[in-house]
Image 1 (cartoon, rainbow, N blue to C red):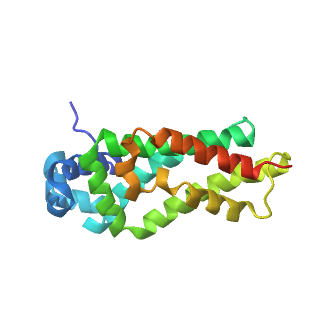
Image 2 (cartoon, one colour):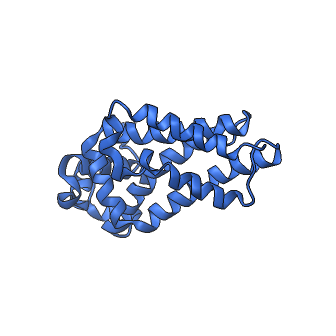
Length: 194
């Protein structure tokens, strides 16, 4: 049987495993290479530096949320329904990441701090999806907004408690779902055309 081809995706998967095992402070490119059964030079052929590899892992992790939410943003439901579903999807994705694998979540928080450009691009993508929903709501007469991008940024900021990792410890509180529903209802109601 032929050996598996070394691809960037395989390297990123192995890097996640290594980060989960050793944490961001101790994980090395040599550890990743060892997990893949290749030389560290093989890893460097795909990712020019340890920083580039860590940035790619961060980008991949954040990109998973983009994919999930873009399907909602581009859906056929009315804008108010899509906005609520999109916000709920974002909150659910963040909760899954924080609760499902706390060690990896903590690791990603360190990596996100190192890769602020990657995080900024992630936020801009998220705001772009929100702006698309708002724009369609305005076009269909469902929402009122003078500037969908500014409105999207305001929606992002207003819901920070439900997606900003700084609030992750609150996401398991018994009253968090009620708080989320109240904020969503307020925001959708505030956007409604009179």
